[in-house]
Length: 260
Image 1 (cartoon, one colour):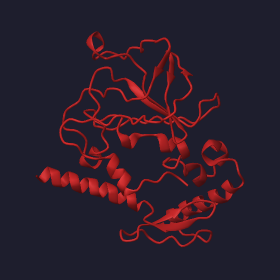
Image 2 (cartoon, one colour):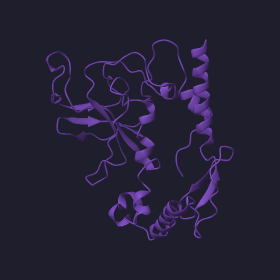
Image 3 (tube, rainbow, N blue to C red):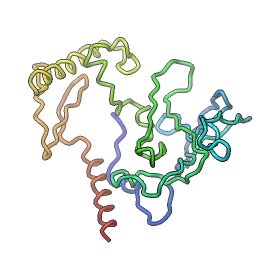
Image 4 (cartoon, rainbow, N blue to C red):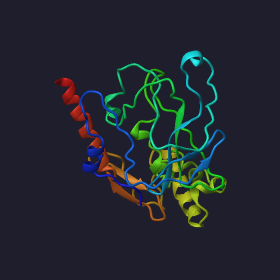
């Protein structure tokens, strides 16, 4: 279950090109979404891995000219359907760029003052209620962009695999308050018990093991044992090894280029 990326495809997607460069959206052979009405006009996006993606959706007007250093203006409405297939400008910022760990995931899109836009990812376009997560990118108020590839919300919208609060309803037995995150099956109660008991055991003793879990070894850098909580819980050693080694290779390559 879940989207996996091996080292070869990751490195191909994050190839380092000297000089000025930008990584645009690869829209080849992707179907378009249906038109969606917003408060300022209709938009159309792309469908990738079953997720509807809308890139560069404006939420404010340009900050140039008389709008500079002023409260944000409303976006200018449009007629017809706006194609939201590509990221828009990033805010004006210094040239130092991000830290080396994420440099290869920076699209380097053009800077400009028409930068009040967001990227939206959703598994469905119906009228049903869905949880909404808003991500505010970092950068120390001097750099960064919500368009970095590591902020791509496709996989999150697809399966909530990386949802950093997904364990909370299980840990505190609040699963009835978050059915969109926990599902509605009876097995969620058994999973809640396993997660909650692990939290309680760790709080009491510093060891998350309890009788209803397989043995969970202490973490070490050689094996990196990781508990996979599911209907059948199990320990896997270094389950994200390919991704981890790919990021390590990128960092080492960047370091060697900086030393040249």
